[in-house]
Picture 1 (cartoon, rainbow, N blue to C red):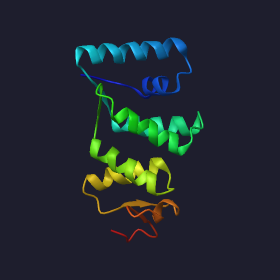
Picture 2: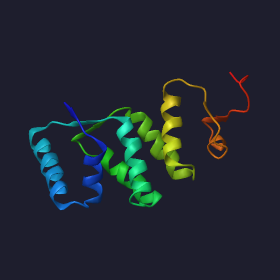
Picture 3: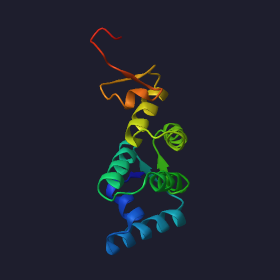
Length: 137
């Protein structure tokens, strides 16, 4: 199995480079015909969120929808699918930063009781805990 980098997913979603977008489309079509899939590391999902928000100013609902659609593609095999599903569910019902939600969901599924942060806004999300002093264990 081969993994995909963020720029492959971005080209597929945004289609801002006609040549590269066609290459990705052809790659996915060939993979579908051959019944193979590509691995998507969770870090690629995180970076895709950042790129789509920061560089392309993709609206939150559209971004959530895009990731959901990618999850449905049989040629894409996501690392920690449960984390991403939980992330998608939480993202629809809150206004917290998408990257923060993914980080917290990943820690939660790994058995962490919370994710410590200095980010006051993020700390209001149920899986985060605001770090006030070094005594918090």
